Length: 88
View (cartoon, rainbow, N blue to C red):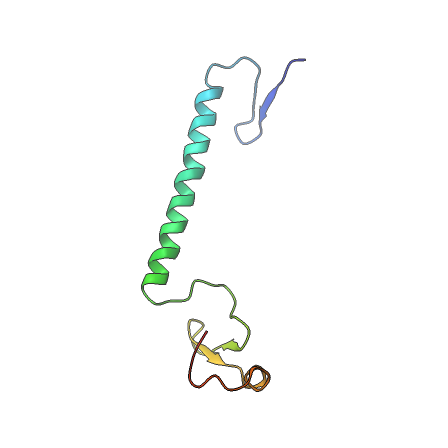
């Protein structure tokens, strides 16, 4: 059985193309490089004190005026009990 690779984004069909292994390596490198950049961005954002989560944890709400600032949800605070000024 013979395999056939179709690259839609290049609009080409490669049967015995010598560049296919090189393209695969470059695609793997690009995906790995993008992953490292995203991890680096999240790490820098966390180290600067900003939240990296897209949603607030239970017990907090996003501030209407500043999305990076979380405020305590009074309804959830009543269910959780006293925290004595401690945050999550």
